[in-house]
Image (cartoon, rainbow, N blue to C red):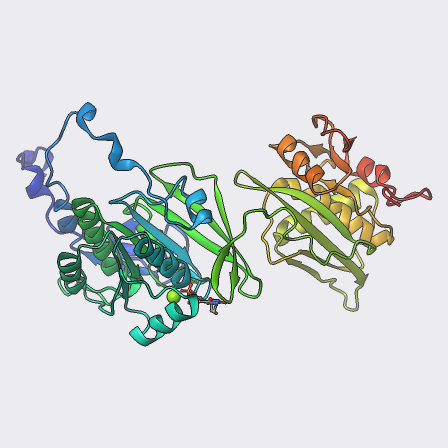
Length: 470
Ligand code: TYD
Ligand code: MG
């Protein structure tokens, strides 16, 4: 090795930024300098793709002068309401002009519907919105707009997938809002790779970010997330865009949740709630009872969790059913609940509360197509299973919330006061909670328990006395 290897000639920053070849994972977005059959980031096989010219593209960003921070106009980051109340709530007021938001979600969840509604809202408010839909034909988009009743004057449509044409449309129309549905279909001929590849998605999104900032155009990019992660999408774009929002839900249910995973202009713990109806996505402003409709209050195996989604309390019913197993390996089936969490709770119920479940099939579900991931769901879920086992009801006016440890102890959860207020507002009168729980509002009795066994006893699920609420 020579001394020049150790001390290379100084070069300009620009010269250092020559195009480099990297390999990026289409599943998790991790990059690395060499190819491998398996991504070291996420362990997926055959997901590494060559990314050429990324460094070249990023060199194009540094075109503006540095300015003193105090001279930056504060008004430039003020969100503009979209007219869609739940979207505005999730984004802390609306979309910031010149910002780029990535709307991710599984196919069929409602991304095109939501973005069309937002574009139409902008047009209705007197602005101009350009919808670039490379995914569907112009006639399809028109039919959807007719169905939603949003054939507004200022709503424009282009069917191009070519990045150059999209930029030309931006020049010609100067829209306030650009929707690209989807970023996976956009193609830049100067970049290698097929549409949807990591290189294409990243380069095209990057260019659109630069244009959005330069023109002050609000940009909404739609990105598909597939369960297999086979398409390069939201994961590889998270660093490029200002805001990442995910539309989630169960396609067989009407409810859609809009979660903001990254937001440069506001909080990320707000949540937008929509119901997919015949006329598009309708805001759900009072979600309190959403999951409690049609509840069979006289059935055993049911418990209600005052859940928190972001800053919003939602009451969710958790159900359990146990039946004698017909095979040597009892089934454990869960919908909307992590199966590993269920397995853990069944073990704790067995060892710490003395409920034998070993020879039984156990089915649990979170009603309404909702996914319950918070630890506070442990206690109501365990109580629902105990209730299903003993056939005794928990009481229709009871809620429960608490994390359960392996020792069978019931641990505290956050935002209990907010949860109790909502439960009280919706007519619940009793709450089974950890020892440290605060007092509830007047009219709501708080039953404090230290362990799961205590909770099972306190709710009358085992004993001879009346079950709570009976
Ligand atoms: P879409 O917005 O096309 O989903 P994505 O763009 O995420 O793939 O919407 C998909 C589903 O929504 C489709 O199955 C039909 C349903 N839908 C409604 O129920 N009501 C409506 O008003 C619209 C436009 C769609
Ligand atoms: Mg779509």
